[in-house]
Amino acid sequence: MKDQLLVNKKKSLNTDKNEEHTNYIFDHSSNFSLHTLNKGETFNVRNKNKNCIVFIISGEIELTRENDPQLIFEKESMFFVSANNFLYSGSALQNAKIILLRIIDILPFYEKLSLNDLEIYCPSEVVELEAIGIEEHLYYFLHGIILYLRNNIQCIHLHNLKKNEFFFIIRTFYEKKIVARFLSPLIQSQNDFRNMVLNRHTPTCSVEELASRCNMSAKTLTRKFKEHFNTTPYQWLMLQKNKLIKIKLAQGESVQKIADEFDFPSVGHFVSYCKKYIE
Image 1 (cartoon, rainbow, N blue to C red):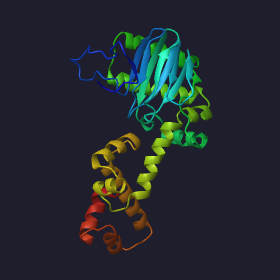
Image 2 (tube, rainbow, N blue to C red):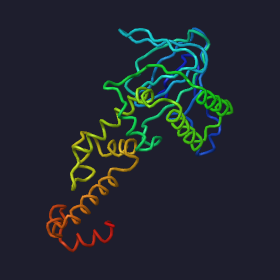
Image 3 (tube, one colour):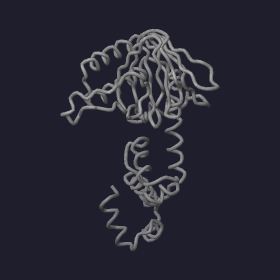
Image 4 (tube, rainbow, N blue to C red):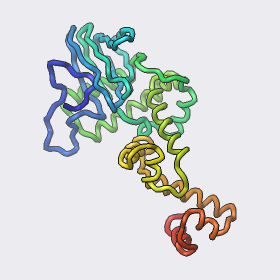
C-alpha cells in the first residue's frame, strides 16, 4: 500500500476511476485528496518522505504521539505536517471532513523573490502542527476543491493549477509572518539542501562528484535538485560554470589561465566552448 497521511483502518482512500487517462492521478502522492471520518474513527499518520497540509473543513480531530501532549484541531483550521512527522495516531472527536494537500517542495509554487521575503520572517526554530484559521477566500477555494474531488476529477494539470492558486491565496490574504511560521518546515528543508550544494560544489565538479560530496547517490541528488532548484544538477552546474567564466573574462583574465582553471584540454577547446555556451 502506498504511503498515506490519513489512513482509515476500515477504508481504502484511493480510487481507480479514469485509469485509461495518463494524466489522471491514482495515488494522490502530491495532490489534493478528500477524506471523511466518523466520530470515534481512528487513523495513522503515514507521511514519510512527503509534506502535507491538512485542512479541517468540518468536525474536530485529535493527534497523539508517545510522550507528546495531545493535539486537538477544530473545523475551519489547517496545520502542516512535515515529512519528518509520521508517527502520529489520531481519532475523530466529531464527524470530520478533511482535505489533504501533499507537497514535496515550495519552490515550484513561490516566486524566488516572494520566498526570499518569507525567509526574513521565518522563526529561528521550525514550527510544526500549529493550526491557523482558514480565512474566507481560502474557505471558498477549498469548497471548490471538494466539488472536483467528489466528481473524481483527478487531472494532474488541474491539481497543479490549484496548488499554485492555494499558494497565491495564502501569499495574498495572510500576513507574511504567519505564512513564514506555517511553512517554516518547508523553507528550512529547502535552505538546508541549497546551502549544502552551494558550499560543496566547485566550478569543475561533475554531477557524480557533487553527489559524493553531499553523501548521496547521483539519482538522489537529481531528485532533490528537481525539488529544490527546479532543474537538474547537470544544468545547474553548467550555469554556475558559465557564470564564473563570464566574470573572469570580464575581469580581463587571460584565456589560457581560464582554460587551465576549468580543465579544458586546450585554449582551442575553451574558445569553442565559449562560442557555443557563453553569451
